[in-house]
Amino acid sequence: MSRPELLPQLMDCARLAGERIMQIYAQKDKGATKKGDGSPVTLADTAAEAVILPVLADLTPDIPIVSEENAASHAMAAGERFWLVDPLDGTKEFLRSDSQGAFTVNMGLIENGQPTLGVVYAPALDRMFTGCVGHGATEDGQSITIRQVPVGGAVAVASKSHRDETTNAWLERHGISQTVSIGSSLKFCLLAAGEADVYPRFAPTMEWDTAAGHAVLAAAGGHVTTTDGRTPFAYGKPKYFNEGFIAWAGYAGD
Image (cartoon, rainbow, N blue to C red; front, top):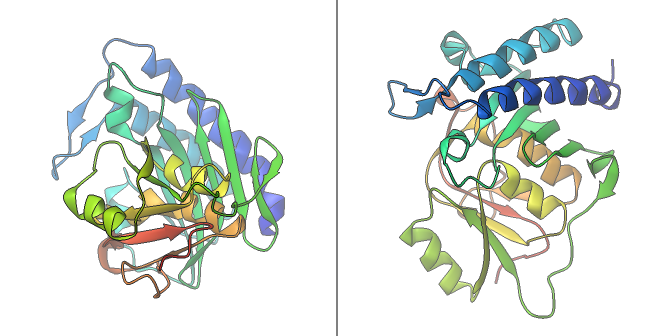
């Protein structure tokens, strides 16, 4: 099955996982606990993962799956092709009483170190983003693409929960004063949809946090580099750990 042919079933899977997440989102007790690294995990994370993993295994039985909540998969050596799954990205946003609904279901396919296919679904906002490199990106079935930087200047998207002084200094150095704050992989999707122009991130993440959104952005005409602004941001690194990166849409830097 080709990458474009996978998309309808991946979107159905993401919606079903989103339904499970929203059922728990409506509960007062979301079953939140802390993992060994101190990050939160909820009943929604595991419920969404239980939907996604069997679907991917059925659709692409020969492609390994690395998923956030499946700790055993983190020891898997990265091959030429593998899935990166974050069943609920933005768990902190999911747990916030004043949340904007900025949490997402994420499935990204990595081929030769780069994301080539991605689905990002924000169930609370009912925004579905897809990206298939070479075939374009969509939001809710409509084609999207990065924009040219507006006359009024570039708009940066920044983490709502992880904004730091390094990010502030980068924005000041590049003369960017307009920012939009949002949680989860939606930051990549805002770039892909032409709602912002650059996303600098200096705090560490994991590859499953970024793969699906990176694929959507790449399919929409953007790209992601390391913090040097030149080196392509690659996947399959040791322990699937990300250093900082910069996601670029229409803004090209200095």
